Length: 358
Image (cartoon, rainbow, N blue to C red; front, top):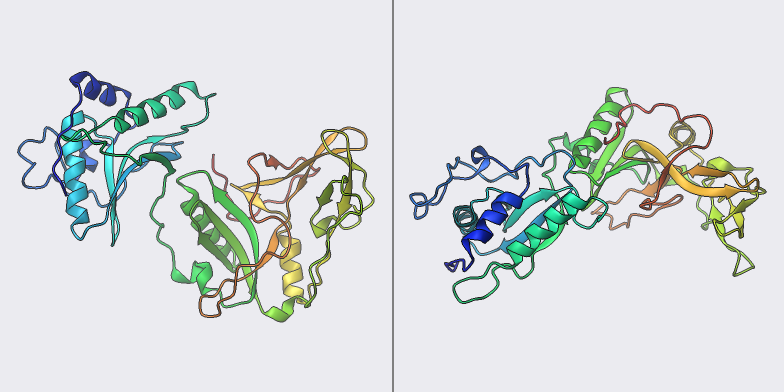
């Protein structure tokens, strides 16, 4: 790693330290300085920085500053972090190590693009601008690709058999997703723990930005082989509203878009043959986002508004050895930012394990 010297004003260092995250990591969470920098470091360092500091409550983003991928990446990243702490006086620098690379980050933020949260938006953008202005002794920008990224936490411990990759069936029922929080992985694992504690076969899967919860395992012949139900309209100007099949009988409902256009209501059919799968679909009819039932908000003929809950849905279990692709059968695989909690009448029955992110 090349050795660098920051060319910045003392006032800048004071500003970074003052405007950095109020929930900074303390010296107890910092790694030991490398031998050639320990004597000069004003920071009392601890013995290990291999793990990311615990983000403060509500934080969703962090600033990714640099990636170190040389064989000496662990030492290089630690030296850079320790150097930056000494020079800027801020303890919000931290590194996360993996087998092949180490990543340097700064701070934690609840938002970086929501101007309605004035103080947090200003703090995030101010930190980014100041770190972007750091240059080395040749006048080159130290971190040209700095950017905000979602906080990625390590996978919480859980039995291997709870992971969806251990599901040897062909079909499974997806009933929940957790997202938008560093706690999403833990919430999904806790949900699976709750289900299994109640005697229900459940699985989790962690993705880049979501953690999902699944129920059950069924063979391919649990569902009749058939072509997907077509959802189409003869009128290209007529919007479609595709409802989950739990709303069978709603095809003749009159529903309007927010701008007053009449919508064609479509309820696809799915021929489930396995009695236990039918029971599971009946026991878990809704799709939960962060512990709450959400859905599509529509205006009815009497001009009142109602949220039609998203249904749970079947997917084909992805098996690496079989080369099968994850395939959705019904419903929506992801929910829109404008998803609304359900107000479609009586509240859904409580589901064991599905706690909400607050």
